[in-house]
Length: 373
Ligand code: COA
Image (cartoon, rainbow, N blue to C red; front, side, top):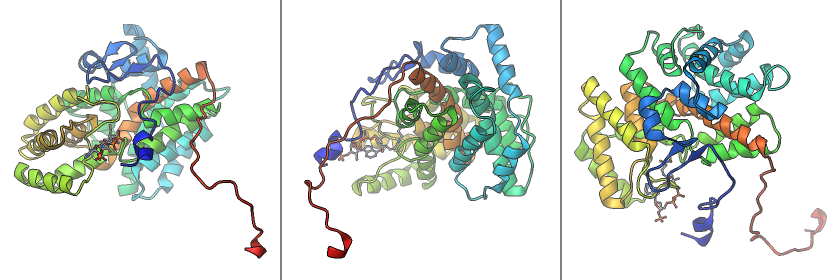
């Protein structure tokens, strides 16, 4: 590996300050505003966590009920937004649909006199699932979905809109836990990119759009879809082991493993693995979960690498009946809460984010006009 690559990627660089989350570098200690992710993922709901992140403190019972009502009331899509979504072809990457949807909302309902950043954040959280699933159904079978549902939570609404019937309670609980785990993660690439956009004093929707574009890549959010594709490639754990060994021999990246910050384990992985196991039992699975565990064992034995959140999220989402192309968009929907918190924090004490680079190009040289070259 070259020196440039080793020192690149801002690895280990403290790029700013935050009071929103600690990543727990040693594999434990991931907290959102001081609350442990282990407790939040078991005892809180995603809406409670979104409130905590965006509004800075846990809601009281009444406040949470009011917040749920507010989000519920913001699920509808305007005719203009629907017509934009209807123009997007079925083969569009669903991440691009959300990027476009967010950008369109920024034109139709811009942050400004009528809508402050908090309202813009809540509206996006409430309407991104609607946009995604409206386009999903319309582009496949021309169905114009009613997105203003009464479902109690974002998890329940997502599964309801996806499947066209009220969701299984266990699936809702599993999805809700995963949404909590995905909500926030300090200065990851997409959050940093949202903060950079916010630091130029740009608008809320532009900052979130930057985050979506950054999350799309397989080294970041896209890893959960790639992990599913890997798992589904094999029929048995033995086949998976042989396949993995061959991939490692070719020095291929195994998606859903490794992490820039964590070196021992990903504190979110145990929670989602438990859900994947429970869902596997409930669905009578004898393939996806055993293959996932074998991949985990091979990666540990061969590379001492551990699964990150994306690896077992893939199996958990699969068992909830969520199509693989919607895995990373789900990540967008919830990470909007973390991005929103960071945009507001950046604005509170803003200074333009503008680092410098080590130049290694040509020495100064004379310019030769084109007709003399
Ligand atoms: N599979 C196989 N080898 C891996 C690997 C993986 N998933 N992740 C890292 N490595 C290897 C690298 O090839 C490198 O080997 P080398 O020193 O022989 O070149 C070494 O481990 C260090 O990796 P590096 O690329 O420096 O790590 P990074 O901090 O720059 O990258 C990730 C971190 C997350 C981008 C990287 O681990 C990765 O690509 N993982 C897969 C994608 C993924 O799951 N992303 C979601 C993250 S939550």
